[in-house]
Length: 336
Image (cartoon, rainbow, N blue to C red; front, side, top):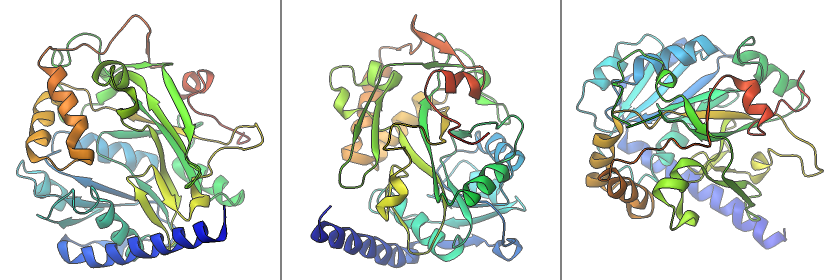
């Protein structure tokens, strides 16, 4: 990369950080428990709107994993989820009624909170329907992973977003608050993925899976990106560029081995496709607050009218992280 492009990226990162600083005015502090944060706590950041049914299991999952404190931006929920979060002793909450779209789909809000609170902490940024799986997660807490990353001088950890879905109609099995959604959305595509490299940001761009296969079968190039860098040893100079798909400085995106080996990586089990999906898709389509004119939700709404089933004869039932490693969807690298 030439000097001019490096300068452009440094300037862009500065602009995003200034933008996040300005967007702080849109956030109203509702519950602030940040005084309880310990210097070595792993922090989790998330935006949410009307996710009350998902929050009990989501919080317990990441508490069990070792997250010490949660930061939520509530985007004007009306289902009781804000009150629920306010009652949680390890959660700090900010409320905004401003446009999710004009905050770069929530990235500006979370960039600000991470600038202010996450410096020096391992920071995990996920949605309420995303569940991190990493090597040895069945026997080792998240702290073991971050300690190894620290010892290896690795500042970021990638995870492929893996869409999970049930067998049969999406609304066939009702989901209940506190339930593990993977008990219902048990299946995934073991193949059907494409990968390219973004030469400017140096990140990999992954697409495919059931969303490309069903909702974007005629325009797979428009299918949602599945590459994420959700876990970062945060520095106040950093900034997410596009969701958690990529960051600046761009070295944080180099989460693969250019010399042919494999770096450790994980998977985000994406439990979007439950019986709640149809109503959620219609709500988000009406709000029109998502990327590229809500093209993703337009595709969902169009296909949902035909009652699509995501399961197919090539679908694979989820077992554990070792299965995902064998399939090449994640790697333990040289972490033994």
